[in-house]
Length: 81
Image (cartoon, rainbow, N blue to C red; front, side, top):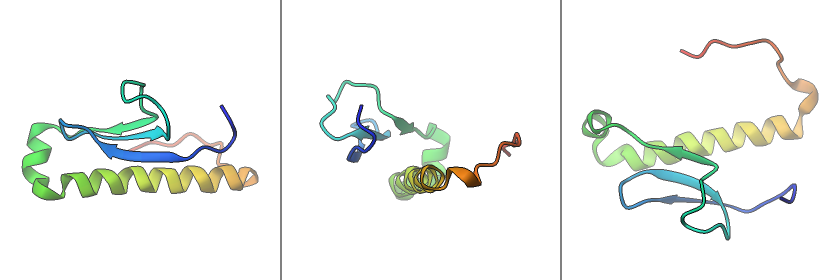
């Protein structure tokens, strides 16, 4: 794998939003995927896809920032809420 790769964000037929390297086969495991439960889809309605895409986009931006600034890494464990 090269250090830099073009990424592709897409939505599957079942509504899952996936992030893959461009050129990967459709059946290849995605780098990241977001899938909402049926209950969450009811709550989010038509905005579920937009929210999933924003979640993946925010993660890519943060990962890019950390890769560009490794000296700023926070090594303390974090609790996710």
